[in-house]
Each structure stands twice: as C-alpha cells, then as structure tokens.
Length: 128
Image (tube, rainbow, N blue to C red; front, side, top):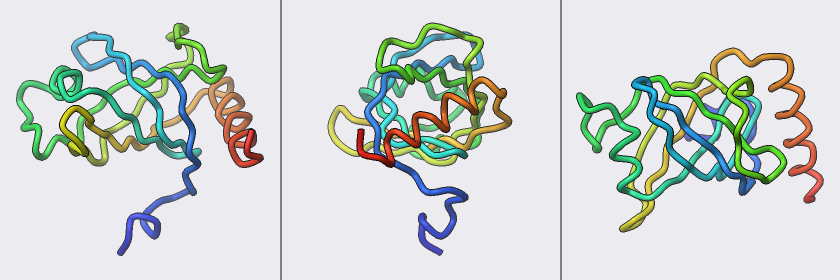
C-alpha cells in the first residue's frame, strides 16, 4: 500500500511557520510543509529534531509519540496555545544533512482550529 493510499485526506503543499510543544513542555520552531484535514508534514533542522524526539527513542525509528502543533495559519509566527493540535508522529526521517521531517496524524480538533484549517486548505487548493 502506498503512502497516498494510506492517507485519509489529501495533503496540500503549504509553507507555514509552526511550533511544536513536546511532552516535557519544550517549545521548538518548525515549518509546516504540507497539510490536510487529518495531518501534516513538518520540517526542522536535524539538531531541533533531536530535541523533539523523546530521549527514550532512537532518531532512526521515532514514531508513535505525542506532541502538540501550533500553526501560524496567517503566515506569522504561531503564538496562541488555544489553537494547539494534538498529534501523534506517524513517521520521521532525515531527508538531508540538516533537514528532518515528521509526519503527524492529528487527534480531535477544536471547532476554531477546524475552521482555520479548512480556510487554509481552501486557500492552498485555490493556489493562493
């Protein structure tokens, strides 16, 4: 089964600032690379990935752990923790010397986040 066949909803390319909050409360800046109603791909420098991945996990197989993602839907730095999306890491991998990617599967979304996410996806689908 291919990745696209496993995906619940199609992903659209975006370039949005994001912020990840780990289980131990650490805050890290990331970039949201693609987005769907059910998940996202985020990217960050390799060193940052080392801080996002729990200490009891290997960088090689760092999946299945929870984190929170705050997306700057307006293109500005995300600040409002009320818009945090609870997510689980579905995949992680190093894609270049200093580029690491995480695939996130979203948990339940608040009504406010759902509205902002749908508006962002509509805008990305329209090519804006």
